[in-house]
Length: 288
Image (cartoon, rainbow, N blue to C red; front, side, top):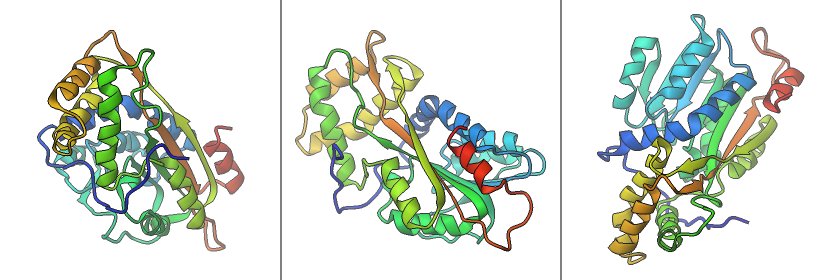
C-alpha cells in the first residue's frame, strides 16, 4: 500500500518558470542520470533509432540519446518550457514545446520514448500512455521512470525537523496532483494499454548533505517551504532547521525509489527491418 494517498485535485507541483528550477533540474540529473543511462544501454538503443524524450528538462538524457543513435538516428526533446533545451540544437536534437496531455504525436514514429518523473504528475496517465504507445513503431519501447517517496530522507538518525517537514511537503505535492505510486502505476497502465514484455526495476541513492545531489532536496524544500508554512503544516523554525540539516556534509539519507518501467508495442505482420525480435528485446529489458 502506498504511504501517501492520491487526491482528486490534479495539477503540476513545480512552476517551470521558478527562478531556481534550472538548478533543481540539474541537481535532479546528478542523482538519476547514471541509472537512466545504464538502462538505455541495457535496452540496446543503437545507431539509427528514432527517439523521443518527453519532459526533457535540461537535456542531459536527450544528449546521451544522440550519442547512442549516431549519425543515422533522430532525437526529439520536448517540454513545456524549451529555453533550457536550446543548446541541444547544436547537437542535432529537434527541440519542441509539447504538452503530452493535449498535443498529438505522429503515429508509429519512434523506436523509443522515454520520460522521467513526468507521468506521476499527470491527471490521466492512461490517456497519455495510450498516446505514447500509438507513437511507437511496432516493437518500439516505452521507458517510463517515476518515484516512490516511501524511503525518502530516511537517515541513520532521525531529525525531528525533517520528521515534520517531509510529510508536510508530500502533502502539498499530493494536493497539486502528485501520484506517489510512481513506476508501479506506470507498470499497471502499460499493461492496461496493451504493451508487451512489461518489466520494471528500482534504484535508490544514498545522498550526502552539502553535495550536488543534496541540492535537489534543499531546493525541494525551498520551493515547498512557503506552501508548507501557508497551510500551517510547519513553522519557519522547523523549515529552517530541516534545510540546515540537509546542507550538513556529516548527514546522509536515502533518496526516493526510482522505478524504471519498460513496455514494448506489439509487433504486427507489417513490421519489417530494424527491430530486434521479441525474445531478444525481452532479455535486454530484463538485463539478460
